Every structure is written in structure tokens, then in C-alpha cells.
Image (cartoon, rainbow, N blue to C red):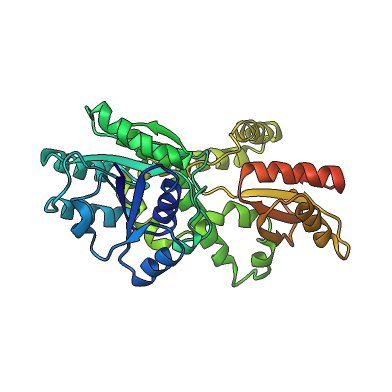
Length: 365
């Protein structure tokens, strides 16, 4: 019997899930998006097996419904589900970055006999929309599930048996645990990145050259500030309690740094950076809560044709690159050439290739 999956919301996340799940045997992926052009692109690119213009009309015939929608939109869809004709034992899940409010709404669905298991694939891209969707987006990333207390094992097993085709690491946590952890490693860093960019903006009037110098480490540190403002507005509001707690901790940390600077102890300041370096170096180099491109820094000398030389070596070994940029400011960076790859394996192969054949120093941040 063919398993039918309905994906509502065919942006980067929803589209990538749809593509990944097409690898599941005897599974039909049906897609819907409110945007007409997105539906057309999804159909043209075979993101799904079938496109529909009214998800409610097919809801009674699908086994699993996945919301690839922004968190506030998901709450609206969940409310509409209460009046939909649904298949017996259908399982519904989402992909949102916050979970407490969504799982509160899931409790209302449970009272109606509807199974909802919260989900959050913790991967992304610097691009958005269905045109950026790719089947391997979630490979080796964490896929967090947040079931309600007492959720039946059979329901969890049914959903996990489908999600395994994303090749993500599926783990289960409570909604409160999820929102606390993502506040620490994702939501707070987004706020900090945005605040640093705002601070840079204040410098434009008196020190306009500062913006040019920001092409180095500053650009990398604040990369996530380029994320979708509406998406992050909703995430920030839904997880504001956890975020406020984290900001209080951040203020204490900034006060600590101010005290170190006021005291002027060189040893204390060195120790501060040493501990930070040790902790940072222990972090896994893999997909996490925030989008992490598979970047390779290459310290190349400045002579004509050096970039062509490097890309030619990669082409010889059939290693594809997704992006290439030259860092004009070398401050706080480990190489003037930054090459992005589709996977960690491609990056490792590229590093070995460049070191062996060109003897240029490479670094993974």
C-alpha cells in the first residue's frame, strides 16, 4: 500500500523534506504552497509527485501531514485542522524552530483524537525558497522531535521510519528542552549578530571605512543577520521568555568583560580568551542549530591565475563547489579565499587535494 505524505509549505525546508522523502519506497509526496509561483516551480522541478491547490481536499486520504511553514503560520494551520476531515491515525508534524506554543496547540488537537508530533530539522541554507531545496539538506543534521507526554510509541515509530530517509539524526526531547537549547545556540546568536550589524551601522557617519574593513571576520560572525526578518520576528516572539533569560546571561557576561578590561590584568584577559578557544575548538564541525556552510579557507598568495589554479585542481578531482568568495580583509580570518561545498566529505576531499597538489594552507573554521 502506498504511503501518502502531504507537505504544506514548499520553501527551502518543506521543499527539501519533500525531495528527501521521495527516496522512501512506496511513498507518494503531495505538495501545497499558498504562493502560485512556488507551486509552479515545485511542479516543474519535481519537488513533489503531485501539486494540489486545496490541501483540505486531500487531507482525508493522506497518512502524514508535514507543515513546512513559519511558526506563526503553523499555529493558524493547526487551528484549521480541527475542522478538517482527516484519515484515521494520521500523524501531523511541523518543522518550526520553536516548540512550546506549537505543542500547546497540539494538546488541543490531541483532545480531538489527532496525533501531532513536533519536529525541527536543524539545518538551513544562505538561500531560501523552493528553488534552493535539495534532498541532502538534512544529512547528518539533528532532527528534533518533541512529542507530547505519553505519545504512543507506534506513532513515533511511524514518523521516524519516514524521516530516516532525510539521513538526519532523529532525537526526541521535550518542547521546553528544545526551546531552551535553541535559544542558546541559535536564537541568541541571531539577536547578537543583528545587534553587531546595528552597531556597525552607527559607525558609518564618523568612520565610513569601518564598513570596508568588515569584509573579514566581522562578516563571518554576523552572517546569520542576513536571515529572513519575518521568520526571525516570529521565532523571537514565540521564544521570547527563553531568549530574555539568555539575554540576561549575556548582559552578565558583558559585565564580566567590562570588569576584566577595567582591572587591566593581562593574565586574566589571556585566560578569558584561552578558555573560550578551548571550548570553541571542542565544538563538533558538523551541522547544528544554525545554518553552517561547509566552508574551506585557503591561504593563497596573490598572483594572477591562482584562483583558477585552485578551482582547476578541484575540477580535476570532480569536487563541486557551491560558492566562492575573496576576503579582502585578512583580519581574523585564516585565508583570503573561501570556498563553500555541498557536504563535509567534499570539503575534506578539497582540503586534501589543495594541500597535496598546491601546498596551500587550508583551515576549517
